[in-house]
Length: 394
Image (cartoon, rainbow, N blue to C red; front, side):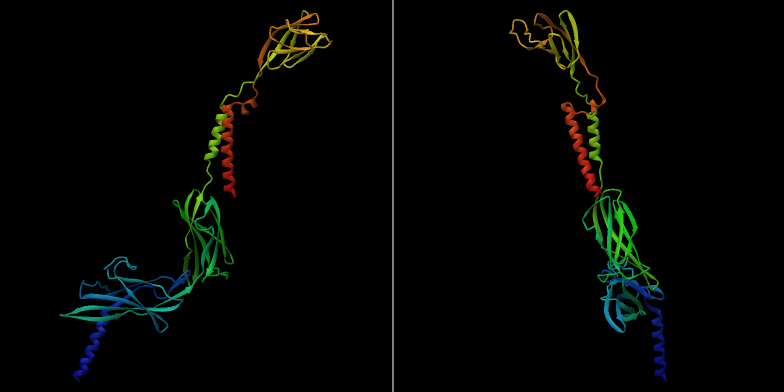
């Protein structure tokens, strides 16, 4: 009977120790759902060994060394062993805090179960005993979900102020055009201190939208696709498309306006002088306007408009003689000069200069060297800005 009592006592002690120690899996949660989009999802695994509900940290008590390993099952078959680490670099927030973590990427979609084994060296009296503890099974599921791939604009392209965005919905690299009322696609725009979220329209596997930028710079575009499966929301994000945004500047237009103002302020060329002519012929005074022709009994007078000169023509065949020169049928007289037409003396007494008043349109003519220079520069600057605007608009 003594051996029976010893057996019962050993079983009781072992059960008590099993209840005292335990492995707690904090992630993934039971029934967690993961989406397989462009690639396999990253399943974060975190676990810890607990003693009487408190986290065990090696070398801060009886436990000298501790190793945790996650076992992944597909059905009843063990498919992977994943070592967990407590070094602050495998997904746990801080090294040496007793939280062990790692990341796991399944090789295919499906239903999985996870459990964690803890193996520790524990001081028991003067001896070190190696013991194992196991967590319960944590089921999780990996399913394929649609994702987006941006086709317009292309990475590294240059856009002007506003651009259309097109993306394709894919499922395992094949177009996804099945109806899905839970699917929502959003364009995420970041860059130059700005963030935008723009809903996209869906037509089969095609997603379309447009985005306007308020300033030039480098921007990053992503398309987030959200679906609901088994009551859980799953989201994927496309690869980042980086673009350069250029804006229409008004620098050359401002330069053109400035040059045009200088052109208008520069004084235009003065209107030419025009002359009125006073002629005495046979004792009579005759006034001639600029460019006027006047017929007299013996001669015809033609007044020049822009110089103090008249031309005298004989109309009856009489010879015209100027000073001691040879008789001619037509001569030119300048101010204070005289001639004889037949037997009658003609004297060019004086020329009265006058300048025409400036008209408003005189200020629009490039009629001096400097006005012509500023006019051409203003025109060139404006045409260059107009070319930029046409490039921007298209």
